[in-house]
Structure formats: C-alpha cells, structure tokens
Image 1 (cartoon, rainbow, N blue to C red):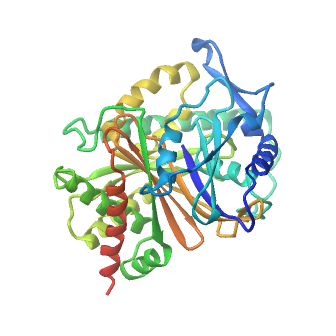
Image 2: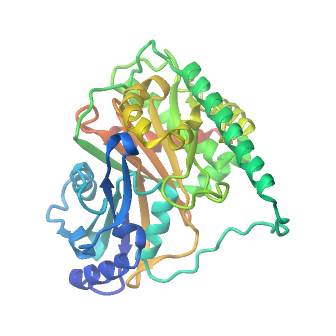
Image 3: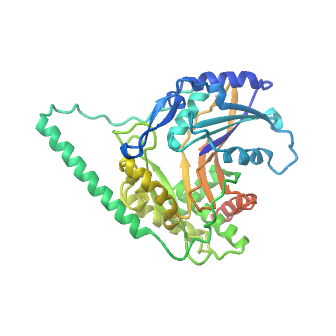
Length: 415
C-alpha cells in the first residue's frame, strides 16, 4: 500500500536537502527501523526486530520527470514504482522524491508492506516525515481507577475473555462461510499480475456534503454511491453486464482506540457492503448503500463476515502461514474490490516549508481482483487513489473519468 503526496514549495526545490531531511526524520521513527526475522514455521513464523544496519537514506530515491506532455506523467511513474516489490530482507518501506512537476512542485511517493502497519498507522508514520504539526488527539471521557483484583478475579477475567474471544471468532468464521459466493464468478475477477496502473481523482467535498444534506446518509455513503455508479459505467464501457448482481466491497474499519491490547501494526476489522451497480438511478444507488451500511453499523465492526481481519489476527503463527494462501485465493468469493477511507486531519501540513496540496492513498490489490480504491479527505477535497491490475485494466483513466461523471450525475439530482 502507499500514497502519493504533492507539495507546492515557496522556493526552488533542493533534492539533496530534502533527502537529508527525510532520512533524518525517518531514522527517528521506530517502525521504519524494523525488519522481519523469520523463525521456524511450526513454532510461530516470524517476528519484528530492529535492523542493525539501518540506513534511512538507502530507502529514499530521487527521480525527475522529463516528459510532461503525457496524459499524467506522475501517475505513469507511480504505476511502475508501486509495482516494484519491496526488499523483504530489510525494513518494508520505500520513499521516492519526484521533482519536475508543473509549477516547480514536487511529490513524495511512500509505500509500505501491509504487514508493517495498516492505513491509519501509515498516516501516523507519514506525519513523522512532515514539518512539526500539532495533530489533535482523540480523548476519551475518562474512567475511574480500577479496583484492586485478587489473583482469582484476574484468572476468571482472563478465562472469560478467552471464551468470549473464541465464541466471537467462531461466529465470524461461520459468517464468512455463509457470505461466500461460489457462483457466478465476479465480472471483475482477473488473472493475477505484477503489473500495476494507478489513477488520481479529485472530488469537491462541498458537493459531497450537499448531496448528503439533500438525500441523507453520511459523506462515506455518498462516496460509496459515487463509486458504485463509476464502476457500473466502467463495466458497461468494457462490454460487461452490470445488472447481473451487485459488486461487493470490503471496507476496512480501524479499531485503533477500541483495542486496548494492540497499539501498533494492523488493528483492523471490516464491513462487507454491496455496491448496487445493477441500479441505473443514482438516488436509488445511494439509498441502497445507506441501507447496507446501516445494517453493518448495527452489527458492529467485530461481527459478521467483514470482520475477517480480526479472525486472521487471532490465528496462531503456524496456522496463519498455512491459512494465508488459502484465504488469498478465496478472497474473490467474499468480495470484488476493497474501498478504504484513510482519515487525515484538516490542519495545513508542509514539508520543509512546502505546502501539502494533495494526498492520494493506494490500497493493495487482493488476489484475482482488478481494482482497489482508497479515499482520503484533506482540507476541502476528497482524493481518490485507484490501483488496478495493469494487465486487466491498461487504461485506468476510463475509471477515473467515470468517478467524476458519477459524482456529477448525483449532484445534479439535488435540485
């Protein structure tokens, strides 16, 4: 997974200075100094350790765009960059500084292996690379100090928690099996490929809010309805039927702040939401999305088939190694795409004094899936990052255009 962020500097860009600054800040982030140490498969797999030879500058590269006459040279470069595998022998991240953008702007391309962290954790790491900014912390209402517990109380509480967790895991596993759709095969399913194509789409947050105020729901409901309309048009333009069945999206849900036992790595659950691509009317699509998301929220992020990331986190390491490949192959039976919302604070951010303008996140592609979609809101704009299988979707621009047209069609129905 990764992100492309563009910056508007106040002075001429000095790439060497930026590399030195970024390397210095990266060295201060503990997560970026970690690497994976493999263990015996039957004894639990792998664990994290600090890389004794860590060199942050070795993870940073500089590239200057030379062809600014193509349709989108930054997206073209990012497509090749994100497809390059990370070196699993060292810390699982890479940063690319790209200069030569119009208006003397520059871009930072940052990617992680998902094993290192989830989307919210990646945002926290990204803040460590930017200029100092006070990010508002989420505060709870406070709670009284716990009463002293006897050893018997502690033992009973531990046993009760273990039994409850086992029951919850069994319920999730049952829901996953029930939610599988063996037939018909998804119209967007494809052969796996290492090739990637990325696309950037901007949506006006004011238009999204106007749609929400007119037709109800949340901003996220509106975005999902817009994406459903875009996927419908995209499928039809590819000669595929869009009325056979809805496309199902896995929507990751962060549990940070709710899970007191884990504070780093991946702290995720998820929802499964049907995107009503079979519906032609944009208002009906929004209503269908609202109903689906309301059902998900009533059930909560710790229940249902969408909570399969929770199930994965509870597997022993030896079982996890065996189950991961099977789960990857089974992904198309559960969902057709991933749609994730990466939260960003609304305060102005900068790097070496250069103002942050855009942030396009990218979610990894699940096996046999053609496209993954990530959305971030920064200031007054929603930035949509599209990552597609390059062999199945050689022209991601058609999907980018479909997102813009779908938003316009919904906005025009606001009266």
